[in-house]
Every structure is written in C-alpha cells, then in structure tokens.
Image 1 (cartoon, rainbow, N blue to C red):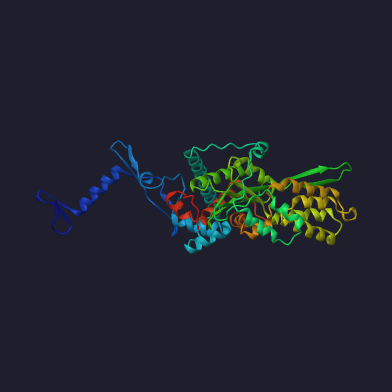
Image 2: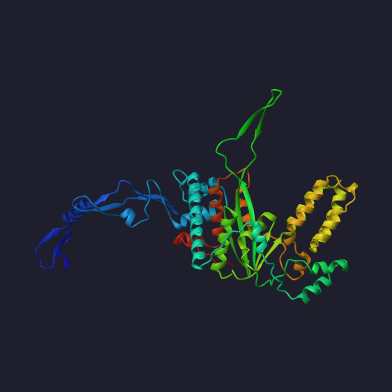
Length: 464
C-alpha cells in the first residue's frame, strides 16, 4: 500500500524508496508512449452539441503488434472521415429536420442552433445520412418480416390473378340479416330495388373486430441523371425537340388500423409491402381477423387477391370518392355538355351509392343518342363498373351500420409520408432517396424512432 510523504513525492509503505512525483509521471508517460500509439486518424463525432473530434490510441506489445484499438474496441468503428452520429443528432436532424423541411433548411437550422455556421454539417451530408438511415430501416424491416413469417411456419404463394380469383371465397356477412333488412327497408329508394341491395355480394363485417387496411401507391418525380431531350427530323426538314414522358418513383403506403390503434408501412413494390403487412399481422396476432382493404382501383384489387387469396375472411372495398371521380371523368368525355353530364352523374351516383351496379349499367346502356358525344367513353365506363363490381358494396348500408366506405386514412398517410415533403416546388428523387425519407417519416409517425436510434430495433406494434 502506498502512502504520501513530503509534497511532490511517493513512497512505498516499507519505506524502501522515495520517488519524486515528477519522475513518476515522466516514467508513466514513457510507458504509455511505449505501449500506446496514437492513431493517425482522430475519432469524429456529429452530435447534438456540435461537430468535434478526439484522439484515439492502439495498445501495442514490445514488438509493435496491436492488442486493441480504442477507436474500434471502445467506440463504434468508423471508416476514413466518417463521423459517429449521436442519438440526439439523429433525432434533431431527421425527425425534426429532413422529414419536415428541405435538406438545405435543415442544415442551416442545425448549424445555427449549434453555433456552427462555418464548418458545420453540410446539407449534402444530411441527404446522405437520410438515405443511409432509411435504407437501414428498410433492411431491418425486410429481415424482421422474413423472420416473423418463417417463425410462424407460414408459406405464402403469390398466385396468378386467374388462380387467385378462382380460389377466392366471399365470406358471409357477420352482421345479422335482420339488422341489414331493417336498414334497407328504411332507405329512400324504389321498393323494387331493395331486394337487389340485400343481394349485394360484398359482406358486412363486425366493426369492432375488423382490421381496416388502406392501401395506395403515391408517386414522386424521379430524379434524372441528365436532361433527356430527343431531336426528331420531320419529312419537310423542320426539326422539333420532344421530351420523354416524366417518370415517377412509386412508394406503396399502407395504413393499418384496429381498435383505434394504427401503424404505417411503406416500401418500393406492392408485393414487398404486402409481405411487410403479412408479417405485421402475424406479429400482432391479427392474421385471423377479418381484413378489410380499402383501395382505389382494380390493379390493387388484383394484387391483394394474389397475395391474400388463402385468407378466408377478406373484404375489398372500392373507395367511394374514387368511384365518383372516375364516373365524372368518363362522363365528361362521353356526354354532350355539362348540364347533361351533371344529370346523368347524379342519377348513377344515387344508384351506385346503394351498390346497384347492374341498374347503373342498364341506365348507361339506354341513354338517348342525342345526349352522347363519345360512345367509346360510355363503353369504357360500363367496362370499368363490370370489372370493379366485386368491390362495390351498398355504401348506404355500410354507412348506416358504422362501417367505412373510404380510403381517406390511406390518402392521409400518403400525404404525411410522401406528398407533404416530396411533391412540391419541382422536387425530384432517386428511388432509394424517396423510399428512405418516407421510411424515416413512418418511423416517426409510428413512435418508433427513439428505440431505433438507441437500440437499432423496431417494435412493429400498433401505436395509439
């Protein structure tokens, strides 16, 4: 045991020697320099309080071989000039920064708060950080979904649309027929049409037991590496310049809701996001409940059937707003004038609101020739109604019993995850950049960002 003697000296308890403090420090310094070598690169940090660096060392043996490197053993390994990003920095930069405002404004705000207007984090770095973090989130969700599906011993085959339609079984209504009958009886419509409303093939689910799923695609302008122009030489020698059709990066967004709790999923490719949905349902013990999909068109209908035709309790609803919109667009091209268009549209809307597709088709087929400007568009509308008949319910009845008719929650999810940030002022995006930014936004809306930044984990649970 060592004891102190005179100021500036050290002695052993037996009093065998007295070593001046200066010599002791010098000796320990020589030992440190002998066995610890300063690394050529400092450890760089981008943090909530600013950008800074500190020295790191490697411990070596007498022959110069490294035992360990403090820059790798004690801290997260970095490559080159890479910087370690603290949890606080990620939260400020991503959750309150790039998901809400542009990369330039985010960088300016962060550096101003940290008083690092010169030498702070550049906006291009924030762009790279956002893309990297979003890609890591997608990779994590991809691996998590595969693990969940495999651990549940679930094997799902994506069928062709023909096989999916053949194997799909329409589930029976869960609401009592007496209750539905009373509601139909009170509808303000001709008595002769009420039996057909009762025979609508789209069933009625128990609202408190169903899982409501709004599914939609939303596109952001795709970033071009070069300006794409093509010069064409006409026969008369006049040269014209044409531009190629604008391409879009499509994000598929899903809003899942059950008992007033929700979760948002996003990704590139409909079947990939449907796999995330399947894993989410398995993980939350929701896969055996009634799944009610709200969509805006037949292309999504076919994809849902291809992926979920094995499920015997699936209902697919065509969003009422999109049905009205499509009818209005086609009638505008088909009929001779706004007044006639409005009269016909009001008539078919009243029929479709009650799910009377056959009566709507019959009415359109018998329109007087003097009201029609373009017969092809009438034919187009009739084909559209026939194709979408399996997902056109009696909207009036569903509203009376408190069931949904709209995919507006999905539209709102699109606005929050993609449109609000990516579809203004002529912005364009790469595929990875668009999906990554939407993934970080979804992480925030699902209230998962704190655990992700701390542990690199996502709970994958419904959020209130």
